[in-house]
Image (tube, rainbow, N blue to C red; front, side, top):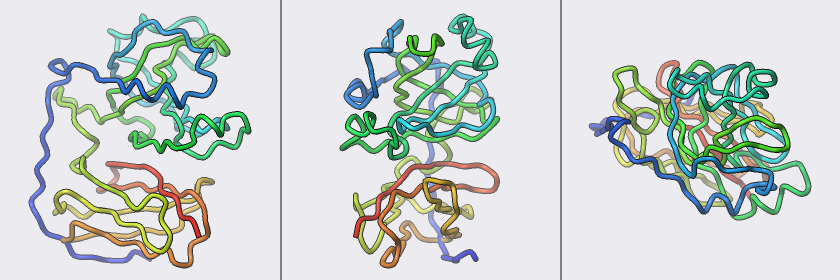
Length: 244
């Protein structure tokens, strides 16, 4: 059952043309890459565009496996293994999205929480990060991904949806998690909550407030996933940790 809150405020959402942007890659992410020695860098930082192919999924090392059906100008980035093993898509990996279950991958993610937007199947996006070859698999990737944004057909890129300044705190949480928006959206907005295994544990509809406080007093200690959406479009997603 959805919990209803009433919200009203004007949202300011500014985009900029992708062609006018200088790609920015967070070099500190390399400190959290699992077995970084396997990655051979071709370009330190670049942005590519295309459609998400299939449903992205998490892996045992904590990373998210995304397949991007590239726009024509970027298809030179694919090699034979991309074509054979990944259906002609570029692999893109945000790191430390979920808690690693692979023992030797736990240490690299310690102290880092990914805030990269996690896209849905068929979304048209711009993805920024280093262009590399993964020698373990033989295919080419954007890895580690610094950002993923919805790329609008008119050529305007921005943070996914109109919620670029969402803050989720404290980290970790005990009895409450705060979802604080820089400005209150006046479009009906949902916050859906899941376990790392994908089981839905909460679904809330917001209206006319810039802050939602989730009571986690009786929630088990764990990492949880949140997705914020308007209509059928997911605007933001991420994770928070509850510790008792």
